Length: 288
Length: 319
Image 1 (cartoon, each protein chain N blue to C red):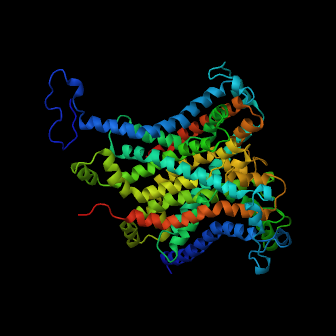
Image 2: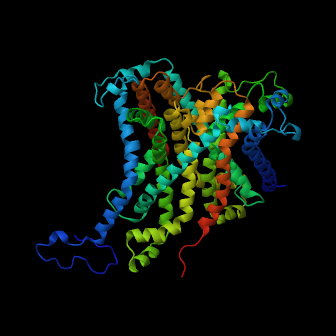
Image 3: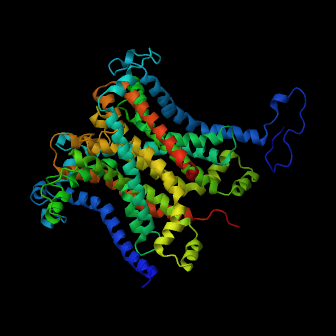
């Protein structure tokens, strides 16, 4: 047997093994989280190695404890979900309102400083958020915005804006200029062109950007911690979960239930959007 | 020179009666320029207000004596002092923190790129269930960091963690290993976590580049008798090098600044204190804003220096 044959066959098996390994390593923590969240803590202490839940020991009391309001002896995660949802949706919508015209301008219009904008965004994207956090902490403390969800939304917009503009810009550049020119000849103004031609064509990419913004805002931790930590009723899910872990002895199973509550919306969104994205991106634009 | 957009045919400023010069219509090019600035203005405004000004302000704060308690009395341009910088550089543990940050960044960057490369290579060709495998590989990256750190904490827990349970059962460990709380393993564990969480980022970039490599190249090499490993070494790897170099910069910068992961996993204990966690400690626990800002400025300067050194060596590849 020559070397080529040995390598080809060997690598084929190695590849299958590696794929299985990756699946195990990436998916196992999620599975483990789910399993722990529905086991009673006493069972976990007795047998920490078990990886399947018997039907008999299945419990949802952990979720009840996590979700119930604090007045009812729970951890109040329902309210946190409301806060996180509010902040993430507001940040997403506002980011899009600001980013779409900006991205359009950068991709289509020649104006003074257009080339510098790209560089500025890259620099902003890579700049340490902890550096920005200090003065924002100071300003927000002074302006009374610390502890308000509005301040948090403002920060999230600035955090997601560079990447949003970048992704949208790339997409706008793939739309043929001729489409816009024909609309212009038909008498449409600049705003009309953006609204009637560019936006509908860019819908899939706008959707993708919206999902990205939502995920960033939902997952964010540092700024929520800095700004909201004194105001328990305004906590986001991320912050609430982190505080739960720091607080008085909370069973690990309850902690895992909280983790599932935090993770589930993102994972569902991610799997739902995977298909939408591939379908949206392959749709043709210019015909005839 | 009148600049008209190509294709307009005639200049809109054909005739200009004297005295009405100020009302002449704008050329298309100038209208375009105005529209462009108007549309990009909100973006710039947000970026400058929420990011640009704070960055400048951090530098100013770094040279002022500011504490949270005295905040309301301190003006923007109070007296300047080098105390903070001096204090930051001479507080015990500063050098250790910097070294830790460096090991952490380099280790996580190298780890996530290597793992991402392997992942991209194995899912390059179509197979049944590929979409699912690819999606699952992206999971660690999209999932919330708080939840992921807690799952790792529980998995690695010495009493009820699954890793220690099976480690003792199958691998014959004598005693449970407190991965995240003992000096000898904590930093390595944190790096492993970063590698696990961020390999999808490298994976995405590398997979996209791999799929753009023309099939004929590899085919030609195969006909010439190159084995799979030779084809990887001499055909694919050179094609991937620019992306790997770029990923190196991006991941290094991002990891160097990272706060959440270390803070949530260990809180900076057991020899894992990185600079951003230290900045946070100064800002909140000691409420010493001046020192925190000075620390942050040092972080940014060190980062810029490293990136410049890197670009000096790999600059041409990154292009």
